[in-house]
Length: 155
Image (cartoon, rainbow, N blue to C red):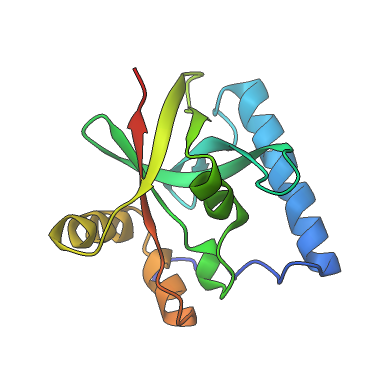
């Protein structure tokens, strides 16, 4: 049976602040080591997703599990099954062009778009669950529809 990560704490709590500090530290260590440390989580590959706060304009960097679909990168906005949409996805909907850092030191410019319901989304969700079974656990924790996000390279 896979190890199941607990959902992140609700925004505005002390536990959420600690979680946010841990996330920033993880991103910093990933950058310094080019993903040698922090480049995986429970066996799944991790990238650093840059985004701009839609209200604050603050630059942010968030570690996110990803998969590949041809040249595109696929991320899941699960937030561990929380009823709250991840801030990074809300921010990317406002500013979809961004940068990601991949293990090994590669940086890519990408444009984020939600994959609509249908066979493509179903296929990508199934592949994401193969990589990281906790996505099914996350889906069972919330009534919220968990978005599947495609990060397309920008030439």
